[in-house]
Length: 198
Image (cartoon, rainbow, N blue to C red; front, side):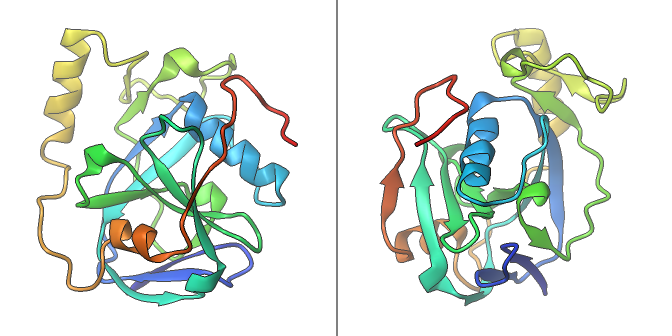
C-alpha cells in the first residue's frame, strides 16, 4: 500500500496498488499555472517542465480529508485538483479523459513512497512551454506540440494503449469520489498567461 501525501503530511491518501501505469512530461500552461498558484500560496515550487505520474484510481484510506479542497483554474476547466489547504501541495488531479480509471500526480508538488524512477514516454503540449531548456527530453521520448498532428497522434495512441489502465471497479473509493466528498470545488478564475496572483 503506497501513500501520496502533502508536504506537511496533514493530507494523505493510501492507494490499494503501488503500480505506476505511465509517466509523461507536460508543458501545458494549466499544469504550470496550477503549480505556480500553489507555490504562491506557500506550496512547493514547481519545475518548469512537470513530470506527471498516473496511478490507479483506487484509494484504500484517507487521512486529513478536512484539510483537502478541490480547485479548478477556470470555469471552463476540465481538470480538478485536490490541494492541501494547510500547505498547498497538490495531492492529485482528475480529468474526464481518465474516465475514473487513473488519476495524476506531480511528484515535485507532493510526497510519495511510489517508485518514481519510471521514464516518461512522451512530452505533451510543448507548444505552451515558454522555456528554451529541453535537456530533459531525450530522443526516445515522443515530442508533441499539440494533439493536432494526425501522424503524431497515431504514434501517441500506439504508445499509450498498452500502458493505459483497464477499468476495474476500485476496491476502495475512486479519486473522483474523493473530489465529490471534500468541501466543494472552488473555481479560481485565473487568467491565462498570469504568473502573479492576488
